Length: 240
Image (cartoon, rainbow, N blue to C red; front, top):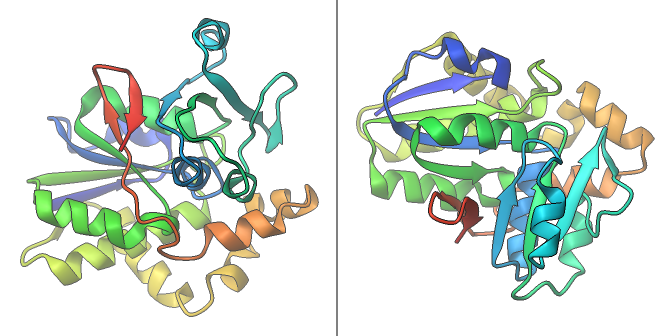
């Protein structure tokens, strides 16, 4: 398997893997972590919206709007981007239209070029690695959301954790770029205490100022939601 890591959506156009490949979109803090929590709370599908232009269309169809900008839930949205808040909800059978500052940008950037798109976070690390191992695709592209075009420590750490897990389970893994190799080194450096290491991350500090410490700590825990959502082109949504 060939693995390439793209550290933020603006770098996606420079990728080596341009043919259809399996892709993983990552936004540890907080979109993909919160999407996993929402599925755990019973959501049946999540429509990722790169912007809010179609939000009213989905609202008229009965979808709940989950939207945030700059880490804050938007006025008029039923849900925000807090994974911890979803864990206390009963959303069985509900559908979400989801728009966030960075995470949905990564999802909608990678999806058109992917043979299969998964969402990943520490919450589903082992389940995601097992699914990819079972599929055993020729190539895998991991796209981190970062923050407004810049790479982020927390997403890069997750990429390193996923690459490490795949290296342990697959016989022949080739890392195509330095970002993939560096992510493994970074994860090995930080894995003993992800939260303490991530305190230097700018988005962690931003969320701490917003009072979101519980979200941060939960999002950095491993294997709390053993689910692997993927994008279904027929419904334009993430499903299980």
